[in-house]
Amino acid sequence: MEYRVAFLSLHGCPVARLGEKDTGGMNVYLKETAKQLGKLGIKVDVFTRVHDPNDEEVIQLGINARVIHLKAGESTYRKEDLYQAGPEFVENVLRFQKHENTEYNLIHSHYWLSSYPGITLSKLWSVPLVSTFHTLAKLKLKAKAEEKESRRRITTETEAILQSDGIVVSTDSEISDIKELYFKSDKTFKHSKIKVITPGVNLEIFRPGNRSEAKKKLKLSTRKMVLYAGRVEPLKGIDIAISAVAMLEINEEVDLIVVGGDSTSADIVAELKELASSLGISERVKFVGSISQSELGDFYRAADVLIFPSYYESFGLVALEAMASGTPVVASRVGGLTKLLKNGETGYLVPFRCAESFTEKLEVILSNPALQDAISYSARRDAIGYGWADLARKLAGFYTSLSDQYSLVSDSAVEIV
Image (cartoon, rainbow, N blue to C red; front, side, top):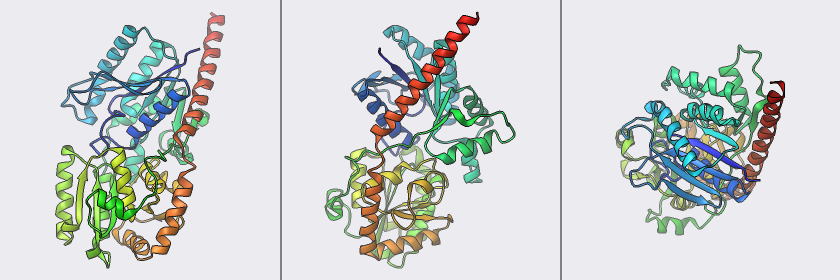
């Protein structure tokens, strides 16, 4: 019997270039999860908003997995305004579904902007709804006081948690966070529907290699290299990375390469360049922009260490990719990173978000080749335990259990009537 799942990701497309605004770990998660579920025989349609006028409506991701681009809102909409496009998105999903005469067994909604479409379609199709939020508003506000999140987002997330038949999170700490921040005063809320399924990493793209050869391939200098990879936004703490490199005793021999960002983050990049200039290291701080996954693998292999001074990460896929590449990681002691990294063994967790603390750990690694090699070996060893195929198997089991429960409840309701 055919089993088909609708992934809803209003704002994040799995085939968008990484490092651009609003692209990152979630996009990788969508692409890899859909592909692996497809290999298991589950048909997956990833419904997302048209993000480029040249996009084809349907793009094949792999066996049984495809991306469906649908119009939803104006191209000028900012991310925070995309909730307005929810009704149009639902309408076009229904149009596509009716045109293809397909039926879905389950809906998996990704990020809060997809919550309204998820709840609506779940009711219309009478199928279970699974939600994955990837980040939560209240966690971001808790992590950095300067962050701003709308009341609409918080209300939508709260409603989605209640309405979902299942919720998938990356770490045990996220269960505690949901209960503490969203339902602390609600003693009736049961967390049994929340399932911890750890994300994976592509071990073929992200693998160890010769550092010098990788630098030569990327046309980088032969100096030591500290890498930052991810979105360019204040929550990621790139200013801390620049300040930390500037305080290195050997900073004349070290480059900081920032991978990520596009035209929409130009103002932030300009501010970061100004900071680098004021600290006297502008010539050694380079902004690469958004790149492909295969290119990102080369940058990890070229780097001596990854710096990840984020204020919050629900999981920290970038850190896992670096580990798989055998690149030591110096990261903030926040969110999922505390479970992913073994302090002093696969990298270092910095408890304070100040440049001096990061500088100290960078110096330890950059000045000790033997330690760097030992961390590299341990990091790769641990990363091998994280596979997208394993995630897909666990997710498939969760889907079918929810479908079975949903079917039993529906049959019971019919009998009562």
